[in-house]
Length: 299
Image 1: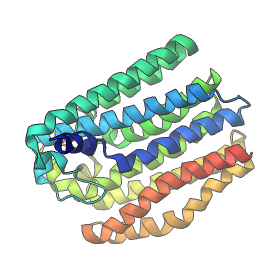
Image 2: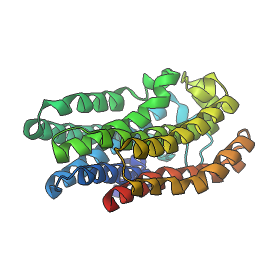
Image 3: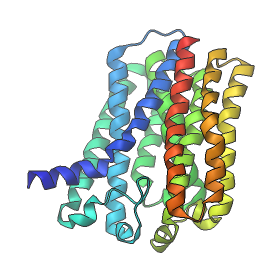
């Protein structure tokens, strides 16, 4: 019984995917250090807890809603798409995913209230937008192709990086803004590419994302453009001043990005052959903000 409950609780969290959160929080901390602020380690730990809770919340609530809609029964799962597969195996325990999602949401909200009290109301817009994205993602955002494309990037880029920076410095900065553009494009790309295997299943439950509306081939062009914008943002950040020379270290991941775009374009309609490139995409998405963070710490 306890093992069943544990799987129904931990599975929807999608623990392997939570590695994205530390990378984004690290980048926010790096922009704070580059701006000359000393790190309050207690606040950084709280930010990290709140960010992980937010990520768990959106994962678990999405998993529950996908199960309830029947989507989980339609998808052909890959390591990067189609859900964890836990709830269809134990439908009687599906409510544990919902409970997990809302408990994590409450933890995130309470940490947000703490920082609003100690850091000021300028944090409020980021916090409110973050909660709205978590709660509305599956039922509403996934019905709008544009919002579905940018919401993940907003959550992990604009909100997580800039929120971390604000908590540690008490203000916003151009450095944090430029740095946040990197995960904005990358994480949007993560969800975009992970939607490719699920086009037919997603269409069947009323979702309207870019691969459904525009097709996979056109979505590959968006994928490539977003990768190009990622590296263009780093270069522009250095040329205009918000990023140091060492920040160009983030460009090193282009060594992976170029062949990944080619592979995605080649195997866009051959999902088994596409999966290795989905794995490379995850590596790019984790590696690039970490390299940028290292560059900021060095700088």
